[in-house]
Length: 268
Ligand code: KIV
Ligand code: NA
Image (cartoon, rainbow, N blue to C red):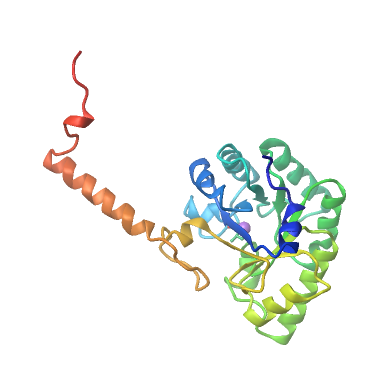
């Protein structure tokens, strides 16, 4: 069986199937997700989640490539989408193509994702025309934290709503195979997801159940991250499980109960 391709997401939607997506940065977790996800995003959230950065801005193309290679090695079915990090695509369509081509050549991923609305429509079209499937990302775009003045929910004003509609339309028209809608007030996200003129596949995160699919950051939904946005549902409680395991280990080492007989080697 071959990997899911970018173009397959539209077919899934046409069949009335929700699109399932999560992020992953590691081979082992990606392998666990693989049978359950249509696509796995190697998100630049790795800067915050893996490296403790305060924003995603310091993430480099090299970091994205190394983790994307790990995720590819750990998977065989899901489409792998790789985030373009801040500074690797905004200057020009040419810069975006060079960076995106590097990602596809060095990792074997099937698509890239880039943040931005109408202003990036030209870049999206430039890449798609040259063989690179592009996923858009509008609404709360973390790479714009400094100009947005924080991580702010989008679409609360009439102006904001109009701008989001235009952004979604422009990225859809430019040929993006899908668009992530993050941190958008529900009725606006719903309006975009159900607008007949917006034909691209919509993926929600803090958006609306009307989206064609949903995505969450894996560590957030597993209950591993200590602070999470309102839109995250914790489907697990890994933080507590890891704490419990580490405490039990420390206690057994101190008490001399670990390693036990079955964990030690006997002479021949
Ligand atoms: O970097 C990331 O994990 C993302 C998702 C939250 C969509 O962009
Ligand atoms: Na991202």
